Length: 211
Image (cartoon, rainbow, N blue to C red):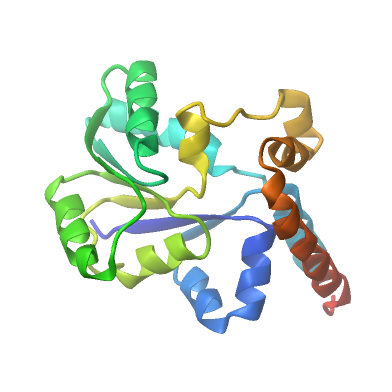
């Protein structure tokens, strides 16, 4: 079975794709793209008239791990700071007692190490590969080896490992439902304010786009 690639896209993803045609082509080659964030949902609705369901990577991971547990498919976690993927994997295995994790690795390496990393992932025979390298790096990385992956599903998950391992907290349910999860995340990571300011450009582009 051919590998299926899935990307969860937020407003910044849209902006990066607008600014970088190569990245836009990378996203277009995915088997499935999902709207992660109110900005992405708003943009799709305004441009197409359709309202996609918001699917966050951190919510999709448990669903996929549950399926892997039932079907005896193993998981490989790649990305995050040293130790983060390991702790995220341990928490997932605690929640899903039958989950098999065949490998974890942090997201920092030199260019000449990449081939060895790809080989190790494929040798692990993981059915699900979770890649948390941040955007646009993770999508470009996944796409670069799209013809080599042995996993059945490769999912770009951004910073989800930080949440799964407990370093960051999820926003309360009411904030997620009302589209304010970004504010909760900003309070935990104030450095994101600079990234948030770029979203002004994103809003202007969407508002000026032909309907």
